Amino acid sequence: MVRLDIGGDREARRRGFDTPFLVNFNDSEPADAPDRPWYLADAPPYRWTRDVSGVVLPGVGGDLWLVRVTAASGRPDGSAVSSVWRTADGLPMTLQIDAQRRTYAILARTDPAGDLRLTFETSRLTAPSDPRILGMPVFRVVATPAQSAPYRPAWETLAWMTAALVGAYVLAWRTGAPFRRAAYAPVVVVAITALFVAWMIATRRMDATIFAQTVAVWIWGAYALTPFVEAALRATQPAEDVATAAGLTAAAWFVRVVGMLHPYALTSDLGLHVNNLADVARGMIFFTEGLPCRAGAGPQPYPPGGYLALLPVILLTGADRAALTLLVQAGTALLESLTVAVLWLLLRRAGAGKTATLYTAAIYALAPPILRAYSVGEMANLLAQALVAPLILWMALTLHDRSWKAMLSGAALILFILLSHGGVALSTGAMLAVWLFLLLVWRRNQEPRGAPLRWELPVAAGIAGIASLILFYSAFGYVAEARRAAQETLAAQGIICPPGDPLLDKLNWWIVGFIFNPGAPIPPPALAAGITGVFVVARSHNSAIRIVLAACWLGAMASLGTLLFSDQPVRWTIFIYPALCIGAGMALEQWQRRSRVGAALAATVFLFLIWYGAADWVRQVSEYLR
Image (tube, rainbow, N blue to C red; front, side):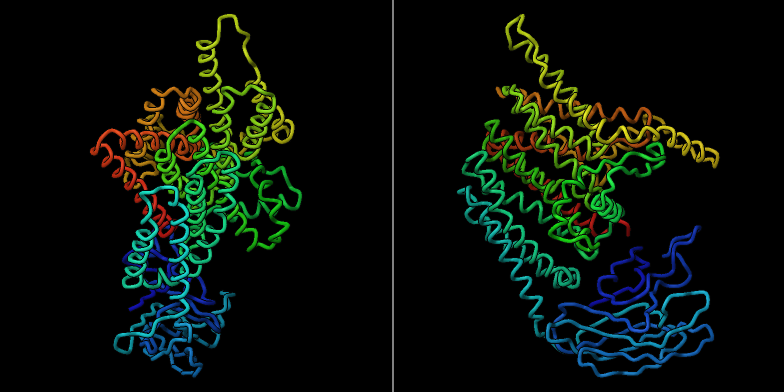
């Protein structure tokens, strides 16, 4: 049985899940009232059809279905309305739809692809106060097979699912090839995936069939990406597990893109970034966005660096809105997913083993705070975050490389972060300050007394800061006054920005709650493994990675100082996650080496983090803004 609660499900208090299956319907009603939400309204939820509207249930298969439609005429005078209904065979059926809500049952055949289609053609209701095209209100659609099993498969949907399973197999095979123990991993991956798909078809068929084509197309796109990433990594750091790093990078990109493209996915800020990218394409570089009240309200400079990184692709995709939207989603996901490859490269350069790099890369591929940011639509933050891992790699490599070439490359990275996102720039500045201090202390202890101090690193950071001020931030001298004026205007209305919550309340909400609350973006096992890894690295002989990890954690903690004058901190969970994954990977490898108990503990924590990240992403896609 397939059931669509048109307009929303009052019991589950969720709406919008009917949207992917409806064609040319009006928005859900009733709307939220100031004193009560829609699911507590007297009238049940519904949608108005237009003059021609339709319902499509993809991939249901079979031949004949009994379709029950709950509808009403919606005429204010209580009259009935004539509505012509058509199914896949095209034969019209004229029904008189009563003014009262009733259920109408018809027999409908699926089309050759196995999709069930029903079209409503209803005369238009003329309402002087409503400019919409109104046909009739529809409340529910329920479809049940009208024949006994077995049912004819929906061959097109079955073909897409098969293509997706084959794509999962070849991607898993390529990713696990360097590990001898992973010889059967592709078969296990496909078997688990096939069982999951079978369960979905049996219990939540529409959730799977509506998404089959997208999964198949993008998993093969991820497989096509793998050799390019592998070639780049092999040219930089030849190693036997290069294919694993490339495969996990492609898998991370796939997970991000398909989650954003799922028909159920909603986002709050994606349109903002599409508009900003369009403005940058037209030559607008200097613009601001309003801060929320908790962050102080008023305008804030919005750096365009991330949009400039995507700009060349517009020459290939074009500038229409659909192309720009896909570019913002897939392009941001690609640049940020390369963090997986960069973390692998960092650990390999630091002398870590294959197991530690595998753990690190796999955990980051399903990082809950990163994936949530895609759902919300924080693309500028993510584009800037894509540069944090390269900066960490640069910090590790420059411990022993003091050439001006290295300094200029670091200055370019820092400059681009400063020109990409203010919050990430603030966290980066705190991290660099701590790193320079730790580096100074380390060199004092390592180099002979009287050796001259080297100022290349502070100079590189200074060059980046001065360049960003000259190129961008100098154009916003008016912002401080504009923010003060906005705060005064809101204060006159009785709205204080920021509200001035007690510091302990802010720490409890933004830090403790982000770790220990149910569904927190950083679960306690991840934090425990990440911090344990810091101590594991602290005992190692690799000073570079030891100093870098300490700088990441201490810098992230220092950036939370914004809570002293703001009620909203920087996105610290996103910023710290690469360092957390590095530490977790090192800790899990150490546990695995020690004993069978340690290996069991490492496997348990690793599988929990993978499950937690995947489940959290599914929940975020299906529940955000519902």
